[in-house]
Structures are given as C-alpha cells and as structure tokens.
Amino acid sequence: MKLRVSPGAKSLAVKGLYGESSLRLSVSAPPTHGRANREVERYLATLIGVEKSRVAIVKGRSSRDKLAFVRDTNPETVREGLVGLVR
Image 1 (cartoon, rainbow, N blue to C red):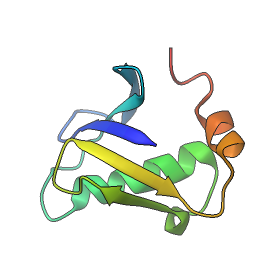
Image 2: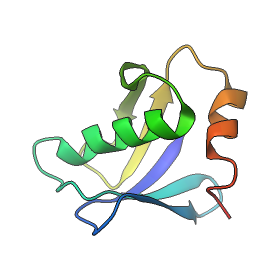
Image 3: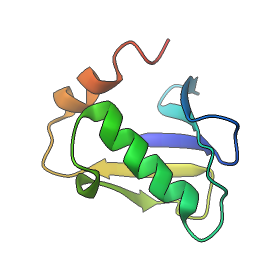
C-alpha cells in the first residue's frame, strides 16, 4: 500500500487519503535512525491485525512517500483493517 507519512506529530493517527491512492499517516516518532518507519510498521500491523514482522516498508525508507508490503495476507484482510479509518 502507498503511504504519505508525517513524522514527529503529536499523535499516531490515520489522517485520511493523500491523493487518490495513498493513505496519510501521522506518527510521533522522529524521522531519524528509522524510528518513524518502525512506528509505521507497528501501527499498520495493529490496524490490520497481523504480526509486526509481516509488515515492511519496501520503498521510500528516507522519504515521506512510502510503499508498505504486508506478507502472507490477502488484500481483503488489509482493506478490512482499514475500513472506517479512511473517509
């Protein structure tokens, strides 16, 4: 899934859509030493209901625009975890 991440925010939250295909997230971790990326992975795993080890940032590790991959999970499971969070 495509993400637009705002690190260093006051809270951890889904902020809606960014454009037509990206999910906007704010994370409280700073964008240093991979902290924000790790927080994004943990948060997505919690939202989707899978183990953290199955979620990985595969593109954009040093960018606000990221691509996350959820291993061994079908798209329906991911969509179900995010339903109601995006307006």
